[in-house]
Amino acid sequence: MSTTDPQRREFLKLSASAAAVVALSEMLPAWQPAQGAGLRVGLVGCGRQGRAILGELAKIEGLKVAALCDTLESRLNSAKRRAGDIPTYASHTELLDKAKDVDAVIVATPSHLHRAVIIDALAAGKHVYGESPLATTLDDARAIVKATRSAKTVFHTGMYGRSNPIYKLAHSFVRSGAIREVVSGRAQWNKKTSLRATGSNPEEEKALNWMLDPAVSLGLFGEYGTHAFDVAHWFINQNPVRVRASGSLQFHKDGRETADTIACELEYAGGQRFQFNATLANSLDGAWELFQGNMGSVKLAGNAGWLFKEADAPTQGWEVYANRQQFHEEQGITLIADATKLAKLGKLKDGVGLPNPPLYYALADFVKSVTESKPVVCTAEDGLRAALIAMRVAQAQKQDGSVAIAPEEYEVG
Image (cartoon, rainbow, N blue to C red; front, side, top):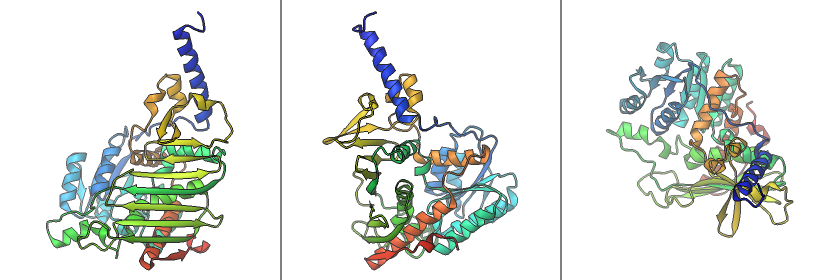
């Protein structure tokens, strides 16, 4: 057969592409789905996030949701319709006392209530997954970290970046020098939504809208910023020494006191800056993180990611075979999780974008840590760091200025 034969040319192209993709992704093992292995899980907190967690847990083979807990009956009933006819409890202490067969507890309560649930579950010998932010005060965050250090069970902080297969691939590129030194970064979380819920009475409405109460909530800095702050630490590998922030009510002037539009900047000892913006008034361009180096940039957007090379960056050969996407005048090389495996199957384009939301991969990593004794991907210490940064930028926003973070603040004490 001649090399000019169309089928032959296509075969050679596919072979070269597969070989090139090996160079792209062999630095990471292929991602493997979690196996529940009979793990019985109790969910504490059945609000919006709790129900999303139930949807992702249903995808993990062998795992059983064995108990539900919430202080509001309406949310318990809603979760029960999704999870099936399983025992429900009005408090986490009741669940821990009566649901003896539960192996692990997932904490999706309001952030300011994490401390008691996490510490009690660890003391009861349960494995624990705690949603981010870890806590809303430094005392609570430190107490949680201390409890995890003395526990004999697994604790995983629910920040999604470190579990995301595409983010892991991008991180391996950055660490291997693909963009050289990270010189700056920025991120955003944009979604036109109110976050306000309606309750059947004033007491219930107050409980449902805890996120809008500055007395207990870190606002957008805590609920969404902590994920970006953790990714920034992972890629920049430094703790910020100073933060600046501002925020205001631009759209939802409904009596709330927490800002619906915020901006902050983290400053590092090496001179790098990382900026984070968020708004509840506009959805354009969604949520993403971007890291710039002197030889390229990496952009990450939940279930997708891209590598942008500078014109003077050295060529390694595989670039000509990579999938690309046009962004105005720039071309991004698509980062594909499990690219080697997909290339061998001739299905590279099927791998553009993840098949599951980022939450799934964080929960899957927690399950792997429990059932396969895998190292915890996101520790309580990681959670403390991100929560501390959120606390300090929230403080800076109130002062409309800057706040220094001393190195010892990152310590547990």
